[in-house]
Amino acid sequence: MDTMTKHAIGTREEWLAARLGLLKEEKELTRRSDELARRRQALPWVRVDKAYRFDTDAGGAALADLFQGRSQLLVYHFMYGPDYTAGCPTCSSIADGFNGFAIHLAHHDVMLCAVSRAPLAQLQAYRQRMGWTFPWASSFDGDFNADFNISFTEQQQREGGIEYNYRREPPASSIPFQMGKEAGNASPPVQNALMSGTDVDTYLRERPGMSAFVLEDGVVYHTYSTYARGLDGLWGMYQWLDRAPRGRNETGMWWRRHDEYGKR
Image: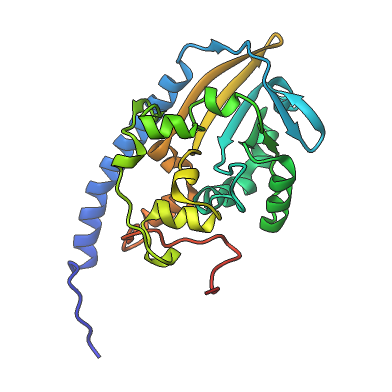
């Protein structure tokens, strides 16, 4: 039986002609992306002199220790605050991706490590639940998250003192959210908050991001940071969805932690 579709239908020849036109633009985008990568690497390095301390599986550690013998360190700022009961489900979907290739980076002089403010025991328990193996350090009671603009105080949030993604946000009270009774009826920030076991204000005092560091002659330098949609390229599932017939095809938050699909 024939089916009707609203999408354009064409011959193989018409498809090939359109595909070759798109290929030209894809190659241009790839070359542009290569150039942006070179510009990231050309950014000036900023010496890190503060003595940050972390709790890790191996005990207390300095920032230089997180390199684990490599000269480069990529930190994923994972949203898991001390008041959460579970890690952010959005960060968890990103971590599902990099958990698989972290070992390849480690054999290419690049250590990938997640850092969160929750105490180490919470991070270890959640990592075991998720089946992850990447290094995860706790910055609990330290300044690391605040200094890299991904953790904020209640006062900053209330008074409009949050500087995130290179811009100042308005006070939290001026940001409307759809408050659903259940996670499925709520806006993405509220849904993420509910799934993390906290309220939306507490949830949003943590933010996602990624920062890069280099260790040279015993000195650590900060080289790059990106936040918000700057993480899109690091979120593996979106790169696949962008190539699927219906793209991202979303009107809200549809994903779950990988062990929660099928649960009510």
